[in-house]
Length: 343
Image (cartoon, rainbow, N blue to C red; front, top):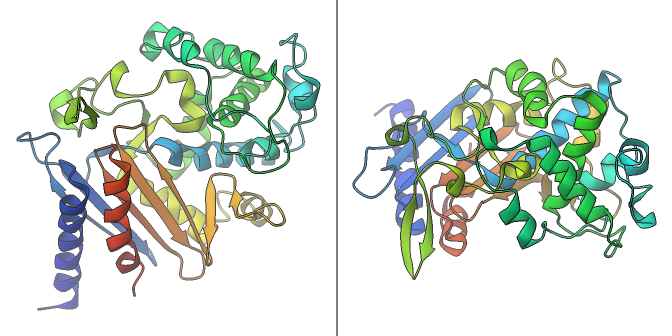
């Protein structure tokens, strides 16, 4: 047996291990090192449905956050925005009631979760702004969510407090400064330059439900498949905080740009801004730091996605399941992630 064949078998075995431990209908894993990409998949899009493939699309939840930060770095390099732009600078003329505590908050503060914003918008806002992107004025919803959040006093400002709202506010700021939606901006400045042709927004497979994995969540103690559509994701205004879907090969391409600090995409200074946490912290712009590895997880409660890269070995990895059972997903990831980083 050649080493190439053995490696492929190992990947398939690991994908099945993730499938078994997570209890999800489907699992897919990928690793990229020195330009060499390996992907393996197991299971079906829902119970007894069509099989997933290595090109299937996966919802990545909060792993979108580093992409929003990367977009900000790209726009800052082009002089469209500045890292030091504040909420008052950008939104002060369109929002009439910004609490004084938020006025000096910058893009960097928002991306590092140090603005003091709550984790999420209120439940009524979530319900009021639900629906498909085609039915909503998504930038207007984003600005409305920012308006409601910024009118309240900050919580624990300056210290780490994980916040989807922080990234939603950053998205609203980008839209005010460019006149373009966050969806258009990230497509033009991140997805297209990196050749991430599979990337899109919301639950994958809306136009062809039988071709892509469905998310699953527990309802009345039973794991149920959630068909693609508005019910399969958070409201569209959540975009900058977590609505992207894409294939594992495209996700690995994105991660490899970070792992190698691709200077055709961003300058070394921009990569440093994205990857270096504030002093004394272990989180930076969509990445948690642990023993030299940068990692993050994402879930919209119906999917679970884990990504990591090691800048020393320039190795990247992705592990995805189409179930929001966090405890079982994390157990599956813990069982296999170190094996993906082995030489």
